[in-house]
Image (spheres, rainbow, N blue to C red):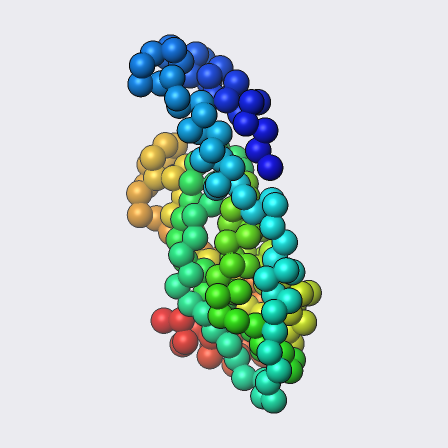
Length: 184
């Protein structure tokens, strides 16, 4: 939960630090708006992926389940700038599957925190293994980072791709190949 008073004070101080007047007409409400925005975009701290993944349904088979092109938005913990893209998530069930929306919600839980893309990818894969008790999980995340696009090296459109393989996916390259065929 965001401490609105502290957040508003910090934003007002930041405005002053860059040479702005926080009491100027266009900026008077900015500290409150920014505090509300951070509460929304960092709301993943108040959520637990295990709660989403606890809703399961029995299945007899153990065929791969894939949810691809899950859009997400996150904040880079190094610059507090956005990174955004898509996550492709797959798992091999062990007698239980979860609702497809729960996979997207799991991505969202971890994306709505200050993040590193590498950590986000691993956290989603680990949650599928730990909370859904999958036989295997694979997660691929493709994202554009504003810290590379709008500052520093300034290379808009460049994509960072990360991959996490767990369980059967770490052991069987044929499953990995099947996953890549399905997400393309």
